[in-house]
Amino acid sequence: MNQMTEIALEHAITNVAPQVNAKMRGRDVNVFYGAKQALFDVNLDIGERQVTSLIGPSGCGKSTFLRCLNRMNDTIDIARMVGDITLDGQDIYDPKIDVVELRARVGMVFQKPNPFPKSIFENVAYGPKIHGLASNKTDLEEIVVTSLKKASLFDEVKDRLHEPGTGLSGGQQQRLCIARAIAVSPEVILMDEPCSALDPIATAKIEELIDELRANFTIVIVTHSMQQAARVSQRTAFFHLGILVEEGATEQIFTAPSDKRTQDYVTGRFG
Amino acid sequence: MAGQHIVASFDEELGQIDRLIRDMGDLAQAMVTAATQSLLDNDVPLAQRVISDDVVMDARQRELDERAIALIAKRQPMAQDLRAVVGAIRMASDLERIGDLAKNISKRVSAVGQGAMQRKLSHSIDGMAQLVRAQLAGVIDNYVGRNPQALVTLRADDENIDVQYTAVFRELLTYMMEDPRNITACTHLLFCAKNLERIGDHATNIAENAYYVMVGQQLPLHRPKLDETSISGASA
Image 1: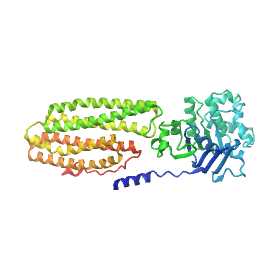
Image 2: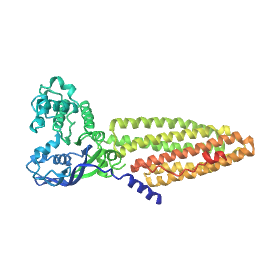
Image 3: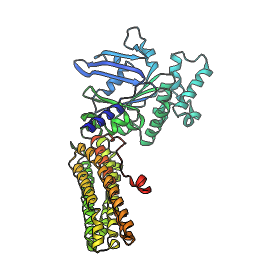
Image 4: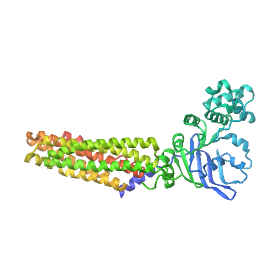
């Protein structure tokens, strides 16, 4: 018995979650779509320069939470958010906050690549232009080239920067959208199933890119692929029926989750 | 393993791997029992049977390895499923080693020879063999019965085997000093005792892996170690 207590103690000590240096914090986040509640008292920290993945079955609220992080839900009339979300300690739902500026700091990449019907160059240059990040044409060109390089796309498109972005392959289009998100120097990048429309090679390229971007950006990714969450993220949060069931180091979530629901989900026992 | 997978064949494949571990566990126990019995009774045909059983053990391990690797490739198991598969690969390798050690004991049966003196010498390791058999049986039973707490206790019990091994070591040394004609038989018996002690260590490994499979946490590293033959005993 004594020995068991000792083991339990040792486990308790080794299992203390590492302190997350939080870039964003969600506190008691509740979201309603009309009368229907989609999120219930979610408390989640997003670690700085880390990849946090949000996993869970369809309709569990993971995308809803992601969209709260840059107020994308504001665009849905019936959506209502109660609770606190902060970016560097600042309330992002404060009425004084400029939402356009917020979305420049917290960028987003969507499930389906959605380049503007313009040239590759214009796609990336658009954001810096409207935010006034470039003082002249040379500056702008430099931002475009750097962003394309950071998105690992430059070498593939350098000879056709003025061709339409929609002419690229799906994987290239998605990297173009990432380049477009990076161009406005965001601090956080939200990705909503960025690889679900891509083939395995294009997916691998995006995953490699996510790993590189982690050095400079805080990334939150919603994914349906558990293997992808396991590969790209350092922290994983599991949502179920609008509740944040468990959050922890990715390794722990996929090797020894503590909640039965997480266990059932990651091992494929319900879907 | 609580709960069914959405894909039923996944459950079947995990079940097959678990069954192979149980089979190998049963075979390992039978081999260790037969090996010590053949040594104590100088039963050469029984010893031969252990040697041929080892072929079966090796084949089972290969089958388990292949099934486990195929399952990982096909299903990408997570959480307790991943632990079960990786744990099975490790436990199978310990069980296979136990088979090898039992075979090695059996191979020495004819070298130890018969005669009243040899039988008396062999009996000095009888007590140790009983401890090892009980240890192995306990580990296998508690893996099959999914009883992690009992495994923690069993793991600590390996200490008793080490103590017994030290005693056997000293006893055999005394016989050799008493009469140099005992040296050949005693040396073989010393190897047999060492093999039994190693079987105990593999049983401990299995206990640790089985615990990890069930609980998801590693047991603490340090465990009392009381085999003195490698330090003070050797210089005495």
